[in-house]
Every structure is written in structure tokens, then in C-alpha cells.
Amino acid sequence: MPVLPQESHDIREQLLASNTEFQRLALEHSRYEAQLDQLSRYPYLCSEDIILETMLKKLKLRVKDEMEQLVARYRLEVSRR
Image 1 (cartoon, rainbow, N blue to C red):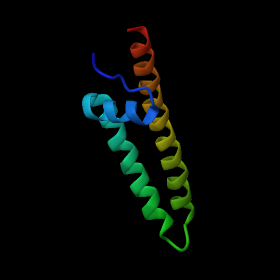
Image 2: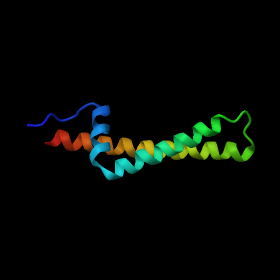
Image 3: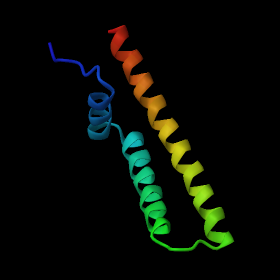
Image 4: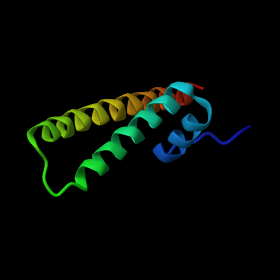
């Protein structure tokens, strides 16, 4: 009988390896993170950059919430086995 991952990190790794939706969300999350990192390198942000930064943070959080929902769903499925 295979060992089932229980820790969130282990579940994320399992989903990253096997779940295309989780992979898509992880890629999207990384893109938003990279864009935010790029913005943080500017010494000054104009009003458009501030709006973009706020939007990116919200999008990144939304994606993270979706990823956490998949982790919770996976954990629930495993506990029912």
C-alpha cells in the first residue's frame, strides 16, 4: 500500500506532479510573483505601477486560494480512502 502524503508540502508536490490544473495555477502564481519582483526593483512607482502592483497581488492571492482549495480537496479525498 503506498504512503499517502499528509503534509501540505507533500500534497502540493504530489499535485504539482500529477494535476494539470494545479500545474497551471502554480505557473500563473510564479508569473505574478516575477512581475511583482520586477516592480519592486523600481526606485519609484508611478500611479499606473501602483495600480498594477495591487492588481497583481490580488491575482496572486486568488491563484493561491485556488491552489489551497485543490490541496484541501485532495486531503479530503485521501482521508475518505
